[in-house]
Length: 162
Image (cartoon, rainbow, N blue to C red):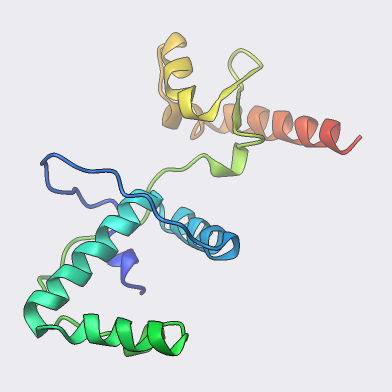
């Protein structure tokens, strides 16, 4: 189990937050995004957990991780995942890695609505589902709707390939 899998879908602290902007090479960004999707985490949740872990490690071990990172940055090496410091005093948290996701039906940032046979923006699909007096998860867990959504996705992808 990877570090992020332990915390999938755990609640963060309720306090004011700040937006963090970072630049990553496209390949690293895509790999991280796919990894987060597989775990059912948003990229924001994953970065939050990684930053929180870094701060916790620094508080428990002094400057050990900062020295490790600066050593690898100066040498131009990437950090190896198996050499990170391990926090031994952590409390085992319950995990929920079976988070509901609709990524498999998303095409061009849109999701099919098998109820009204239309396509809606993926980010606003929850709002669209409310028009049908339901929610996204209820739509995409209903076997009848799943078949219809799969067919709509196949049709949309076939149209794109023409």
